[in-house]
Image (cartoon, rainbow, N blue to C red):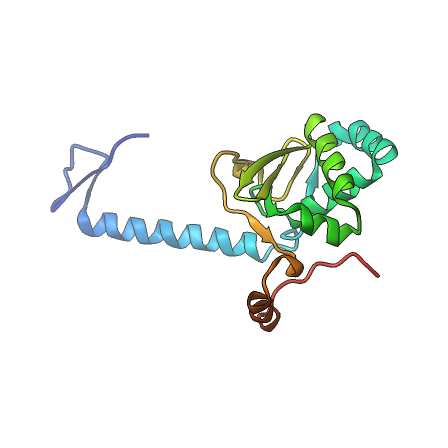
Length: 180
């Protein structure tokens, strides 16, 4: 990419020369284009879609047949992940949402890690689950990032103290429940 030369007056001999006013107008137009692109993506009927790479169908079938609880945890994480393929939650959340024991969650997470479906990063006592973006992803391919990302945070009400429970219950939050 060629560098731009900005000054009070345009240099007629330099095709990359522009005035301050032209550069300001150019930056505003670029910002407007970027905002329109963000709005198109946000308003897309596919904004809640998750993409799946069919090259991993055999692995998913194996997981479904051999480790159905791990498959359920993977589906929960995929459903909750953000456009950077990450979600932060504790094991307690997974236990409560799926109605399984701590041991089942631990064994399932181990299966998912060992078979490359997820990476598990620590954030205090919670885990950040990064879902393998060659299997599932929620955003355009150019948004695949791994080292720095925001994350959707999933909390269990039962993990909070009474004061915080009251605050949380008064907020409008997305509630996740798989129990009948």
